[in-house]
Length: 175
Image 1 (cartoon, rainbow, N blue to C red):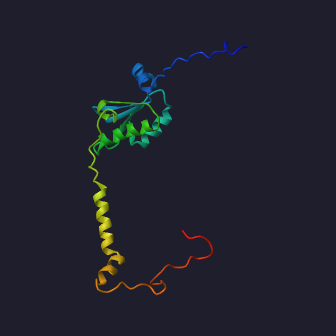
Image 2: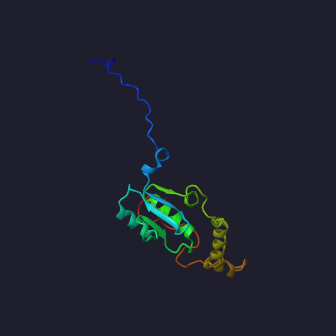
């Protein structure tokens, strides 16, 4: 075979569907959990048939949801009066972080709504400079400089020669 007859075929770009595309086309086929607000039970969650019931129960109980009596498959948030909105949003976020597809009401979806305001981060440079200045004020080196007067020489240790260079230790080149 000659090299002319074995030309590689040009490859066409293959477009793989993203998770968002699949969810828009068939939202009922790809999700695992659904969260919403119920007029009687408050914040509720339910699992779809895409996840085993015992696994859904395990996750929802750990996210502080409890089964609703007489309604199989429905879970309500325990103590919704204690920051229930934030806890439900956190449950949606946690389950998504574990890789599950979660459908939620617009208000409960952390991906669609802005997070609660965070305190503004301070500029750490000024704090760092203040800590360095405080440490320098307490430094023993600064105290020894302040104790000497300009007319008197700074005392040097006896082991160090006052004039000249120190001999190199061992045979070899210096720096």
